[in-house]
Image (cartoon, rainbow, N blue to C red):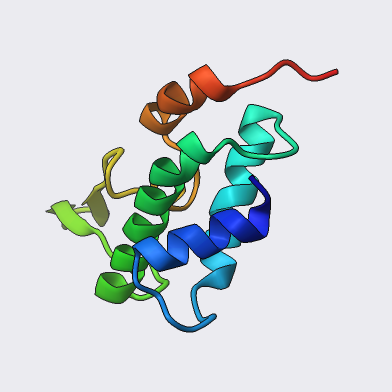
Length: 113
């Protein structure tokens, strides 16, 4: 399946009419292709790419493009602020591939030639 076909299918399934989210979809597709060492993606990866794209779109609509984290603790003497950051809310996990994502993609991964 070509990148354009996959992008169209993701947009259709997420009911995205315009080209506003094309960059996000392309970034997710490229990230998956790089991790899996694939030149073309199988159709079976469409649900993964759709869910990952939906997660990014939802995150950006809720928080914007900046990171927003809950404060876990504040210490006043010598000023220390600890943020409640876990695997589900870190920016790297949302925009990149988490360990859970990599585990899902392992079955599609190929060795480099």
